[in-house]
Length: 107
Image 1 (cartoon, rainbow, N blue to C red):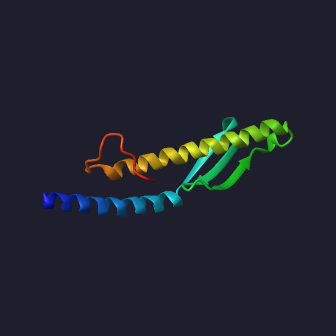
Image 2: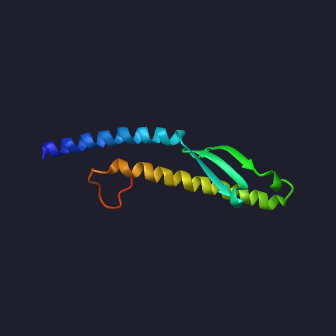
């Protein structure tokens, strides 16, 4: 029993190190959110910080409300993509460690 707990603690330590490394990698990763068929593109990092926005010049003379809606949609798309990337990256980190069903890590 004592050996099993020790092994579990070692696995938890390795997982914690892997999670920290993955979080650092995610922070450096960029995702692109789009709306309006690519007329508005937003680049965001894994920390969900907006880095750049590109608005097609054809929209600049258009209705301001539509442009604002497209910017919001591009931001939301980038956030969803960043969340998906995070889920995919973190999913492999817990493999091999017996966690209860439905258990969510605090990250």
